[in-house]
Image (tube, rainbow, N blue to C red; front, side, top):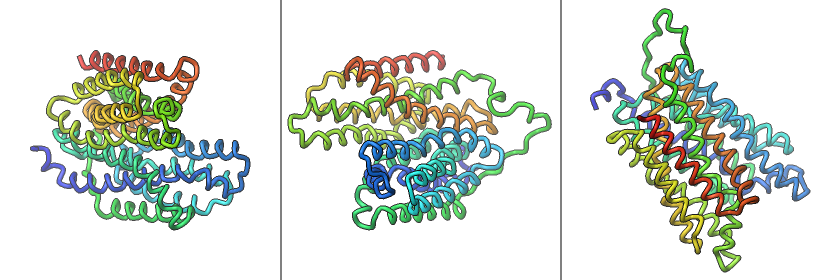
Length: 396
């Protein structure tokens, strides 16, 4: 804790960043339950077109966010991390309010792209927390941040299912924008950023990627981030069909599928801070290798379950193991990237995770359709085991 005195505001920064990250992630995901209804309200009548436009509108935010994350990380290195959080929270508040007044589906898609372009609060928070927290508490702090982010992903669809019947779809967007505006005010007034030492003459010759002497650990973290999301998302296209084979009553299929999808996120929420704290003691690399290896082992029985509840329990246990990856990835990048390149590298790691979020469903759907649903679990197992071996090798 010797370093804590040089970062007097890191605990308060962490609390504000957790609140802001939670609210912005909720805003990005809350429209999932009612998105087809909103698309229909905007003038799309063909059922197939409604499904297609819903998918495009939902993915648009994550697509533009993935493209912009490295840029915002680089600008954070140059002009300050707090400034990027102010930009992201104000931009998201405005974008969410504008989505509530969209006139047609093209406006909806464009504004969802704008939300991803202007957003990035959660990734910016990870940068600020990683660089302002004492190094011996980095894993724990990033673990709590990860819990807030994953809680937003879990709570967002629940709020999106509850609010529209009460206040209407458009007012739901206005309410989300108002809550994010509160996060904007908290960011402006409460977050304090430590001043960084000026760059010495000639130091500008090497910036960003060129300033990293040993690139192996950083590349390993990019790959690990992709594997993390791939492991979470690979079963998305097949889960309802797979659960239908395990549940006798068709009425309970969708409920059980929802539990299976939520179980991993809940496990990660519960374990992130604890595994981050453990990593501060035993080493971040050790936790990464262990989490990947345990996840690989847990994927095998998922291919041979005989009931829906068995799958729920196994996904929950897998979520417990995966919860340690996100904070440890950020910690390793933090310790292996120079101060003035940390934001950009963490931004690239966000893009790597979004890549896994896109590749996971694509690969899962392809493998499940051509080789059977068990092959999805076993194929993901091989990838996770390969990631564990790769990280063990780079660690050595």
